[in-house]
Image (tube, rainbow, N blue to C red; front, side):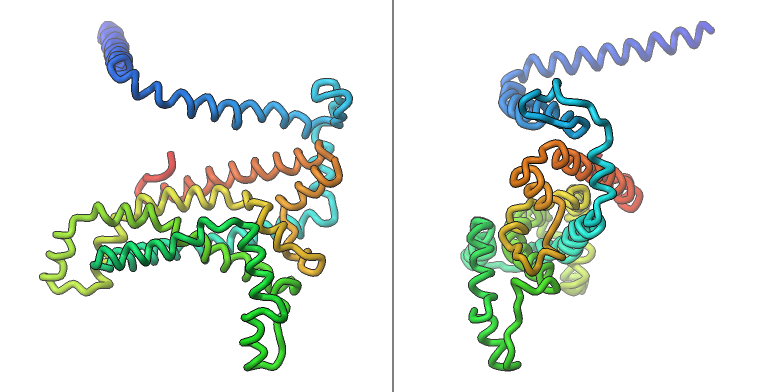
Length: 319
């Protein structure tokens, strides 16, 4: 009993010592913590305060009565969405667009970073980086406009296709081509910018490792597999978890801009549906319920993917 009391006192003393050490560290470096204050304030204002509005997902919201004065209806709006005839199509469109984009788009920045890392000429490397980074700074509206111009029946792409086949392809109106155009254009726009963090990671790899491997007779592929990819592995794990956790969070802008009356069967996703129901039709409570449902699915996916990655990545994950 006496030993147990002594052990508890020792643990408490250790915890107190750590707490005092942490407080003294904060006092000594208070300037650094002051830099966090603006970001914390902005996060609270724009991320946490708006959560109060999520209450209307459980109410029959009326702007005249306000949030607290509106009638409480519980999960009625969620049941309405889950039982709607287009629920399955909208959900599958969202999942397919995100999943295909993740599967096809995630390896591209890694491959691009590995290729850039092999370029020895500094000037040539900077020029290539400038070219591949540039599409990221093009507005989504402009990208959608470019797609309609280039892929129209009289656009440059169909001119070449017609030359060989004699028949143009309706890329922007045929539902079968929407996902392909959306995903490939997204990869073209974001791959270069997404490769920056991988390029930065590879720049920290000791060149002597490559020199030693080359002397030992290792080929380029073996050096990439045993030197570069292990260095990228932790970054890849974190970015994959974040990408997979946000698999339902497709922005509505590009999908909405590329949407036409003919390709709606594959282009109607949760984000565009929420926009139409909430802002165009004015059904705020129903659209909020759909958005909240979408967020809950994202959180579940984030936790699930992080758990799987930690098991496959020797305990290293997002948290």
